[in-house]
Image (tube, rainbow, N blue to C red; front, side):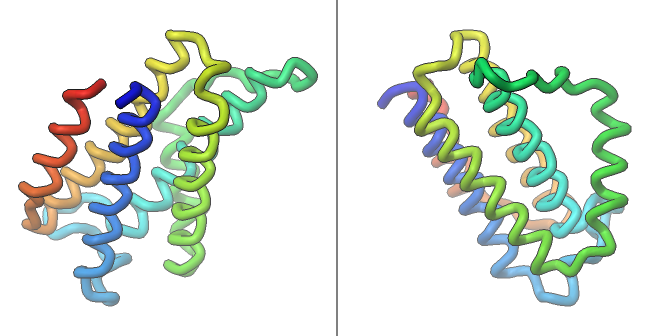
Length: 161
């Protein structure tokens, strides 16, 4: 399996695991912070969507010779807090739609533009995968849900990287 395919499959698996939590979490709990004080599932989905959208836009601009390149992200924490403030008033369905669109855009970008990326840029695309995994694992700890099967599948995918 190529590095690109490994990354795409790992991102799809993280998405599948997040969606499984969504399917099993009662609707009334989707917007409630985790019992340990962590982010709600809605916040996690919105946060990931924001950063994945930014990542795709950033690299699309970088690869387009006619585009003004976006500046590299700075003040990550401040940008994350601002994105959450803007997303929290939105209905859950809209945040979920943004997450789904951002996930598809990220996967499509990797499938279509991988060969145009430098080795450094290819390496940088493992960050969105790690980002998703960190938030999923925090969510699982916060809600007392484990996913040993998902962890095993991701470990197998990572071995091909």
